[in-house]
Structure formats: C-alpha cells, structure tokens
Amino acid sequence: MVAKHQAKTGSAPPPRAQWAFRYFLAGQLGFWALLLVCVLLLPQGLLANHGFTYYGKYALTLAPYRLAFIVSGLGTLLASFYLPAQRPFRVLAWAFRLMAPLLYALVVTTAADNWALGLIHVKFGETLFLLQTALAAWLALFLCPDRRNRVLLLLLVLGGLASIITLNDILPYLIEAQILFQLAFGLLVLQSLAKLGNRAAPC
Image (cartoon, rainbow, N blue to C red; front, side):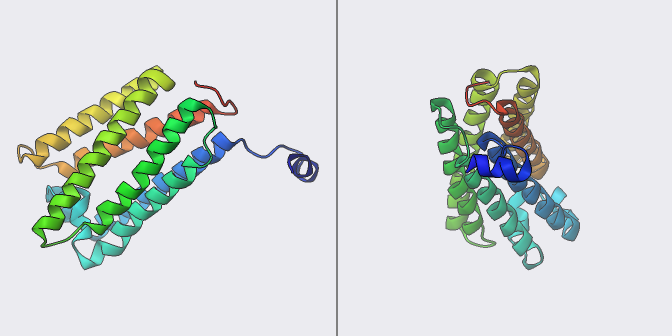
C-alpha cells in the first residue's frame, strides 16, 4: 500500500502522528470558529459570567454552541486512533477517548431552567477540567517537557484557578478564564503532537 502511494505521488504518506495532529487541530479550529460565531451573535455573553454554557441557553446561539463541542469531540476522538502504538501514547489516546464523551455530555446537559441537569452539567465540566489538567501536566512535565509547554501549562493553571474563582462569584469573568484554559490546553497538546513528528517514541 505504501509503495503504491509512493509510486503515484512520489512521497510517503504522512506518519500517523501527523494525522493525529491534523484531526486534533481541525477539532480545535472548528470549536473556536463556532464559539466566535456565538460571541458575535450574543456579545453580552462575555460579561454574563456564565461561561461557554451561556450560549447553549439561547435559541440564537444553540446550534453553533452544540456544533462547537461536537466538532471538538470528533476531532479529539479521531486523533486518538492515529497516535503511535507505544505505551506512553496509548495513555494519551485513552485520555482523548475519555474527553470526547465528556464534551458531548456537556452539550446534552446544557439547559436554561433545569437545576438538576445544571448540577450534572457542572460535574461533567469538573471531570473534563481535571482530566485536561492532568493530561496537560503529564505532557508538559514528562512526555514532552520543554519551555513552551511549561509556559502553556502555567497559563492553563492560571485559567483554571481563575475559573474556580469566578465560579464562586468573586470575579465576573468565567468565559474569559475558560478561554484561557482551553486555548492553553489545545496549544499544549498541539505542540506536543507536533514534537512527535515522524517518531513513534516519547519526545
């Protein structure tokens, strides 16, 4: 199969790690593009202190809000199937496969006036937050340690702490904190996947 591809194109197909990078990147780009649509439609959400969930409670932004999480989850899930087979990357693959259903669960449990569903939504969000924080720390400190990843991890931690503070109504900037956290997480994962390159061994 590879030989036939090389004969037709004159080059080898991209390594599996590159496909993992591309799928994760596509999911991230789709998420932020659709979230931007939500912000443009209802810019007041930036000051509402309700985080991303704000856009899942209004008919005007419901579709792009849902699609944002679905696209992100799909990109993450597809990336998990293209990671190298070695043991450290199997851990990363399973983390991705846990993230995808959590992203979908956040969409399903977003409700405007349902206290019980809202509580479940928060628990799913907390679980995703802890999983992403643990994964980011593992990548930045053990699997792919470098200065850029450590800076991104610091930003992620700051975004996480700011999210916790805003959830307790100390500061009214929940969505801004979530944006910082998710941007840092996405960039850290992409940076780590890029470092894998053609190698199937740890960075």
